[in-house]
Image (tube, rainbow over all chains, first blue to last red; front, side):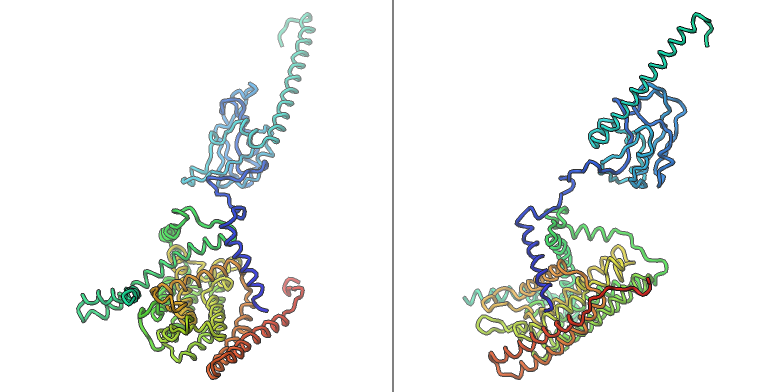
Length: 201
Length: 397
């Protein structure tokens, strides 16, 4: 008969209506600014720049190679390379970004910048409280607000960060070993060459 | 005891007495005008306020039906939400499409709101509380109610957009289709009351046998008429499950897609005010208007009962909206023409038989059968006609 299903449905919604006042389990709402749902580890929204050590400018991993700028599909990254070099975390002199801007109103959170970065300098952040009353300046982040420490990265993406740290440490160790062997080889050749001629190369 | 009864009566007539007291200070020449203003202004204040409260109650109720909280941020428990909404819609930019017909585009929301307010002219809100006691009140109500269709079409046509035009066409088709069962469902009351005046229809229902009132809804034809009237009223006010004209998923917001800011709010308000008016008419025709549900409750003021019934009907509207999904266009039309129309016509016959049969249980039996059996047979028949098949699309093959 017409209306049977309607009455069943109305009974169900009435049960929901009164039930939501009685049992708190029915209400799945998380009251956002006061409560937050736990984030999953793979959560991501906008990119940030990783730095090592204590000083954000000193320890910046980015060497302004501009690959991310070229790869970014919506072109939200703007980089200006420095004229001079500064020592990076390992003490090796490198170029650094004089300007590094990300327009997060344009960014589509695709993570391509992270995937193409050869220096593990750019990673995805999880901070989503980014609303601002200045829709131009407030959404164009320059390099200082973009810079976040490696410790922070470990905190938000522990598994991924451990993997990156291990890889970087391995690379560094390999480089050091190579440098050492090169230096030793140099020493050896120098030692061999010295008796033959004192002429500097 | 008589003293208490007198007090109750004075409380019941407090607004009428206040109006007469105020009119006493006005020179005789200006009295008709002042009387009109004093009757109209409270309506224009009270019903938009009720609209504001209803939007909040609706959002809260729908939230609870879906196991959510609903708005709870503005003020304690979100009770100031309507004020925030009002400020927002007032301060929003008013965008008019460049190719729109500006004059008609501007007039459509005004016409909708004024047409829906005009409905209240004949609604008795309490004992002796009606703006005009027209002796063709019910006719006036439906005539003015159909002005809303004009406003809807003005909005859809003048915006010069596909969505608004499609929405307006849907709305017109729906409103005209459902106006037929709406009017036919109310004719049974006119037959029984022998009057088109809303005031005398209510007066007729405000009598009691024992403790029971003589509401028309408490008869088989009255109950069927009430249900049919409410279904048609839901469709008439474009509310879920008959909200095809503004079906968000297909045609954005239907005929008021191109309205923004305060004009949009006016459309919204006009629709709700119209819904209250049709609910008020249902109350007047079937639920005894301002009369109390039991004879021992008559000491409570009449306007209280009217608004209590109105709020109850609004709650049902919200409940239905929270439950039922939107109909398809063909289902909507089938319901109007293949189910509602035959049922209302049969109901006319039932009401006639009720009138001419002697009072007693035999007339209850006959009339109830005349309502229930066709309802079952019709719904069965409609179900049988339905063919379930794989849908094919001619143009995609």
